Amino acid sequence: MKKEKEYIKNTIILLIGKFSTQIISFLLLPIYTYKLATSNYGYIDLVQTYISLLVPIVLLQLDSAVFRYLIDIRKKEEEKNKIISTSFIGVLVILFFSIIIAVILKLFIKIEYFYIILINIIVQVFNTYVMAIARGNGHNTTYSISSIIMSIVNLLVNLVLILLLGFDARSILFASILGNILSFIYVFFKEHVYKYIRFKYYDSNILKKLLKYSIPMIPNVLSWWVVGVSDRTIIVYFLSTAANGIYSVSCKFSNLLNSIFSIFSMSWQEMVSMHINDSDSSEFISKMIIKIFNFFILLSCGIVGLLPILYLVIIGKEYINSYNYIPILLTANLFSVLVGLFGGIYIAKKMTKKVATTTIYSAIINIVINIIFIKKFGLYAASGSTLLAYFIMTIYRFYDVKKIVNIKLNLNESIIYIIAYIILIILYYFKFNLLSIIMTFIISILYIYNNKNFIYEIIIKKFKKSN
Image 1 (tube, one colour):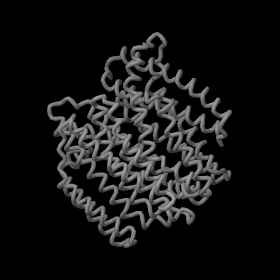
Image 2 (cartoon, one colour):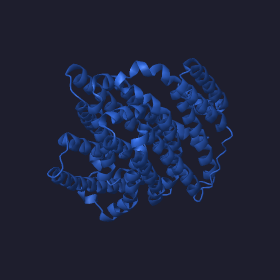
Image 3 (cartoon, rainbow, N blue to C red):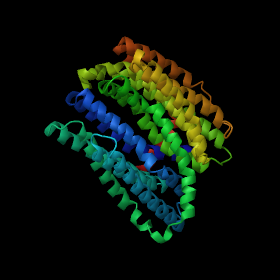
Image 4 (tube, rainbow, N blue to C red):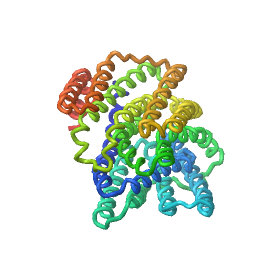
């Protein structure tokens, strides 16, 4: 129970920051769908997709290595000096050569908004790096506050540029730049990163060790990109940027699950890394996987159950067809939760090559199905291929991690939530809104009842102590 409390505490702190990001994202969604043309928004969404791919590649995933190695040396200041100094110099060198390559490519390839995109990548690289330091030091509150800063800046800049000044979707990129800069400044000084950066602490052997951990994760990033977001490129190529605009709105709702899980995943990786060698690790990991999975099924039920009522209010008419693809993408993201939980075991064991290889086959399946069926089935092929890819990856990783940790998943408690989720999807498509609300309420009460002891011990009791 002590480990569970520690996990929930870290998760709640991180969730506050991430939840603020999601609130801002949904506040901005009506502005995007009412004020921006589908083609314009579709192009910028594609640009953001490529930025999300390029940032970890430019970083060579050094942020992940810094996070993982700082966990083991939190109280060893001299070793922290070496890790941070070495990695920071490594990031500067990598970024320098990346900028040169980008400028050379511009001579041969015409890219709209090139310099805005380049600046976005640079500031996100720096911000991602310092946020990894905050997490590695165990300062999750700093990480959360930096996320809140980004969210508020993102909202204000978009409101001013789109509503007041009538800018197009480029506003999203401008907001991202300013938000990341201010977030970086906050974390850089809050974590006193400047105190750790000394050229005398640079150690090429440490850099090799970090890169040995991080570089095998790059194929994983590429594979995740293929599974999760390559759909956008294929949609633009075979259909149109307008179709991608519609698809991206569907993803906004389904990715709510992924965004929340990214916080659970951060705590999960930290927790499993700290306790993977405990005598009761198998029992703890198995128990927590089921509890987390049940929680995300409940969230999925809530989204499917309540969304039909809200959809017409917050979505412009040009984007209304996005309604049809949300349950498919939501189910795909539900499987991605399990994939991420199993992946945390690889991270804990520093088996980063396994993280990459387990996604490659799913990535291939995703892209092949997309190319073959996108012209015939349109956006259903894009969403369906993502679902199938995540499902296959879930099965593969489950049996693969069992070779590392003897996890035993008791799905008896999960069955009722799974059945409720399936029924709610049927009600969603038939638009039986009242029944959806009633069923969502019932399944929520049932979840609270089944987990009343856990909720009391972890949350309510903790809250009483703090007061």
